[in-house]
Length: 315
Image (cartoon, rainbow, N blue to C red):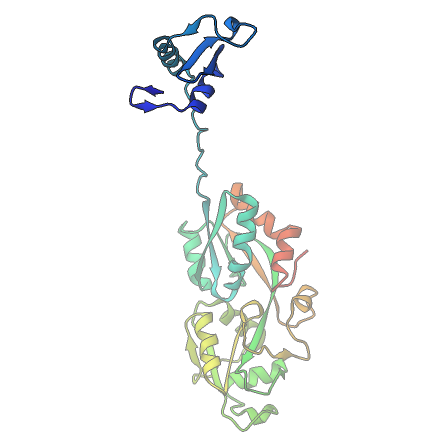
């Protein structure tokens, strides 16, 4: 059956009429449409519906069909708020440890870590360029609020091919002051020692001076690396090199046992490692809002378990 420019098949007509009180009867020569109530007992219509009336009925049905339901509104997910945190280059691996776990938990806040040395980070904090910083050294007299979130360790690193794996603090001091200049003096190969130190303003340089050198000065022959990554690269490229970094950042470089103890998350957590150093969360005032929530997570069971992969726990 044609309706306008559209040909309606018998199944289509039946489907339409199923929505009405009319029935479709097929004879040898025609289609008969009739009201079901007018079918006689033998199933034949007593008052067939004309094709014209059927077309009118079809048009009425199409016009009266309810409009489709509009799709549900899509609420866009707001982007995560960035929380700018300064991070010491000697604690750089911490970023990879905490960003994803913390962001998955909050879904609305994502820490954004900015790497720099100790001095630069305190300048950025004072200038308001970061909300807080994570550092190993807080200068005396600093008018800041700080709290430890992990326990790290100052470590002495050497080239992977160097067989020396342990030194005493006195030996480390003698090497960096220049009094010992060959590895054979400490049980190693007959190989000149190459000193690698950090730039001024680096927290590890300050800690190394306080914990190892005391009143001694690092020899002027020492190479100066700007940044922890540069120091590790320098040590890795020179078989006779020795340098210093933090346990959590040593990477593939061998970290020497000091006075018989190696730096591990366990020996820093119980502070039996002699060069254990706290990693501090520092802000200008006691944290509030999202900053306080981030600190609370770092010190929570979940945060401490996350940090405990590479650092000693504080609780």
